[in-house]
Image (tube, rainbow, N blue to C red; front, side, top):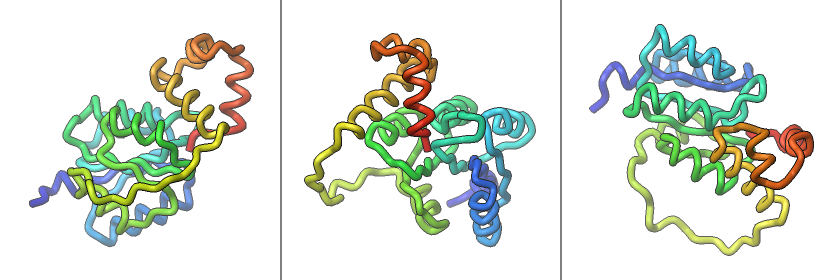
Length: 180
């Protein structure tokens, strides 16, 4: 059973066109939708609105991380259902998103049906197909970097120290491989 609170949706997406399309689609389904493109906009909205659900892109405007947004939304309301969307899915970011409070993690392209179904998935699926796929060195490196970033609260200087690299080197890697 859903309450009116459950129909209050926050979309955190820095791609304005995709955000508008997603918002219109959810509004046609009876949701009241607010949009934000950065952590600052999310914080401002949380001061004046209450949301039961949120869709968060992993890469946000201004270099903000969607994982930090998930953490903030979950801290604000632990009952909020949060679905994370990303164009560059990885095991590390999926695990961190769930640990930080997301209820589900979807790779783009995902549509409104996928997202709405994800809000209703509260249990894991033991029948999901296991695949044998080799992971590339680049992917492993990126996952290790992102895991270290998450452990340090996205402090680039501290993450670089823990990774044994110069801060500028890490910043260049992050700029090249933007968190989505």
